[in-house]
Image (cartoon, rainbow, N blue to C red; front, side, top):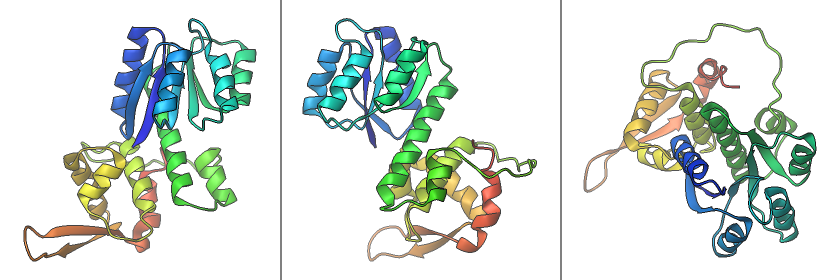
Length: 242
């Protein structure tokens, strides 16, 4: 799970950010702070991977806090969530390493996309020691080769293309090792019941092979593994994700 910290002085906005964060999945909120001083106390005690940071706050503002954060060599990533639209603030935020910038008021879909992009990047960084230019272009900088736009196949009811892409990204990093439904549900951050639906869909597309392991005690366990021969055909279900 990615550990997140919300820094927002408006309690209603902080609560909205918390609810949005929970909906995305794969993130754990370690704390909410109403000021930069309060946030720094949290960061000294707890590991935080991602900070959702407002700019307009009492005392030290968000940009000043971001500068302080980098001088302190705290390695938490930052997504700015602010009503500030002036180019100088945006430029400064990016220069100090903000990985995304959300302007209030924003739609949930934009918030979700920002967090999913971050989660995808983190997954890639943690599971690959070296990255190719193709990895950087496709996974980090969102550059893709131009291709003819085709009608993509519909997904069955109960299968979200966003979640399917997320599940598939996690499965890819198994590097052909087998896994159980429960293990993958924990990695992705969704329920076992939900993961079962996606595993069943993937098996139906023959992109996963399943073997049953009969232990000495208890129920048999299904172990799943990527079927590389079907991966190319399966990718048509993912191409609508930008």
